Length: 268
Ligand code: ADP
Image (tube, rainbow, N blue to C red):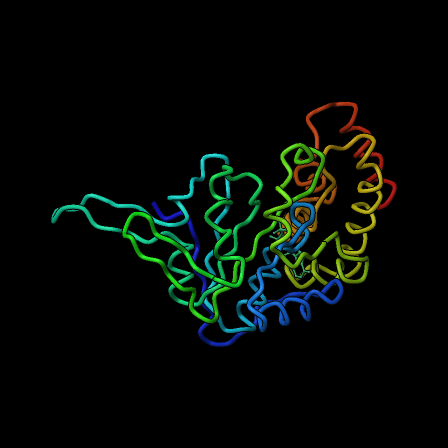
């Protein structure tokens, strides 16, 4: 099972990323000092893109693991498999990153089972080691190795939280939706849509985001605006694109959907 995506931009081409603040600097300094990084923020606000950008900028391979509630420590570290010549050990993505000096990005780490956080503890202090119980090895992380984790501190995760003993090993960055000019730039860059349409979508999204706490479980993310712009770009009417990409995606409840449509019509 391949649970991780590996990316390596050999041509040094940087992944497009529009900074929100000083996160690029903080990350560069964390990397220089071999410190792990935690990125907090709502879904679809650029966390993954930021890590991809930093990996390409630092010219490091990147292993991205999308965490889920069945993810175990063995999925990260590795396990013995049975082949035609008997059993053999296969490294998991975390182990590969540790050996290669790569960046390992655990996306939505709060979703993973608790035992996964235990394996990262010895990697996130100055020992930087990964004990492999299966093979008896104690791996010393190669110099470029960096652990990056993200989580969405939304209300559903309030109870789950991360233990202070885990949290306090990380340099932390807080992300939010980009400001108007940046979000317009991102939507235009990612889809090729006109500035005018991108601006309308961003205005509608901002109005919907201000409803977030009252009516909407999740606010529309930059990713959703990009989906909507793609539909418009390919010829779907504004109304149909907004209905499909925004209204139906954000809510199942007819009266909330109506409220969403009203907000969109007023701004876009
Ligand atoms: P997250 O990891 O926070 O859920 P992503 O990084 O996958 O979100 O962002 C979703 C999409 O939004 C990206 O694929 C990218 O197209 C776009 N995006 C969001 N923020 C930015 C940004 N600051 N710079 C460039 N693209 C961005």
